Length: 202
Image 1 (cartoon, rainbow, N blue to C red):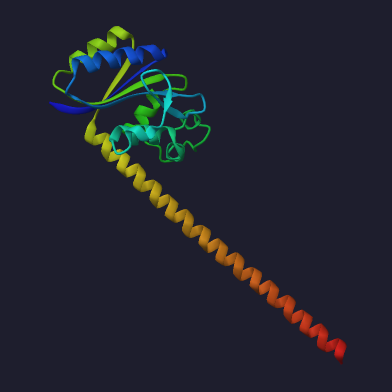
Image 2: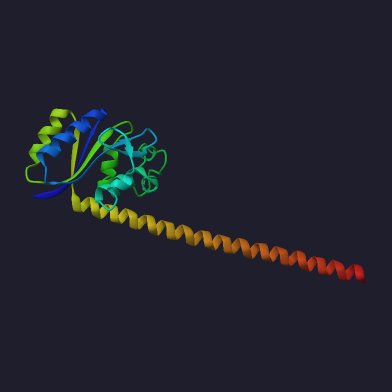
């Protein structure tokens, strides 16, 4: 038995809920979490409930699935090049460090603007069951090892924290330099006023 993250995409939203329902009936005790997400044309990803209503991604907080969807559709996803624009080359330099072989990059590329995806975190004994179900629905399926996904999520979040720390350091240095320059300017103005005062007094 292996624990996997299953990602299936369709152009039609209804297929995702249909397959999710069938998976829940066939894997009543093997699914850890599941969610349906849509990617808007701007690259944002919204999590849906069983009635197609948008829900807070916090419902999956603390899980690999929640972290995955949060990264793909949030500011960190834009920073790492996972937005729709970045995937088309408009937001990131082509020489940047976006790794097309990375799991997060592959999942983001699979979830194209305007598409709906089913994300499932589950234990699988026989992959052919889901393969057959998805093929019958016309979906595009990708299967990722749970630990690989979790490792990349942790790495991405660590990279974001490091980038934020570096940005804060640069900002502090710039503010310090600005304050120093401002103080020096004011001191020169003060000296000039004193000089003018003594000259006029003489």
